[in-house]
Image (cartoon, rainbow, N blue to C red; front, side, top):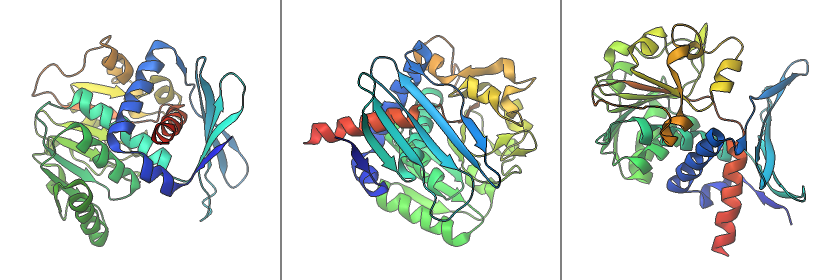
Length: 307
């Protein structure tokens, strides 16, 4: 029987610890070659594109996520999980929550792997769904004691701070400029739709870890080359996807490409992450293909265990 999940059901069933654990397992599976995860594919349809990310966990399942760029108000993402032996559709998730939580979970893994073990403060630029899931996941891997948030809308950043306080039990405050959000923070999250830099790397303290979730391509990026130049450790969740962007992703171009590490390889101990508390580390999140399906499989298993 095919199980259908709405955003409400995803939200109720997936906690941050489960999500981060699933994304850690997915990154390790991709590094080991058990998760086949090619770069995303897209088809131009005149006025918009259909985008597909697919994955295959060898011997267990395969599936895909699809979404479009037409901008219709009721357009939704679709994630489909197939049984790897029979091909039957095991589950379908419709909506935005599964993908957002997947991205947050990947960010949580990056914080756990690359941020200082004693990190307790977080600054976030952005106040949307992606910003929320990044903070949600970070709070599952570090004992956060304070969050600062900036976004262009005063009402939205105030609401975001109130939600962090209410739902995560972490003291949070809205601030009125980006520098105030990131100065002196142990972890920084960039989760905006800005095509121009919102961060000045000079405002980062030694030892800061940065998760960059928004645009990160040449001539369309929420940060500038100054952040990449400041990074002692530079990682991504999918080097293949990073190299497949058009226009190219900044971190996948010279002089940074040779320093870009696979987060899965860091988790496996095959590449080195942070080696000094003063280092600045940067995670460029690109969305490893197949991770939404990986998380949907985990969601099905969580549901089955609860029955």
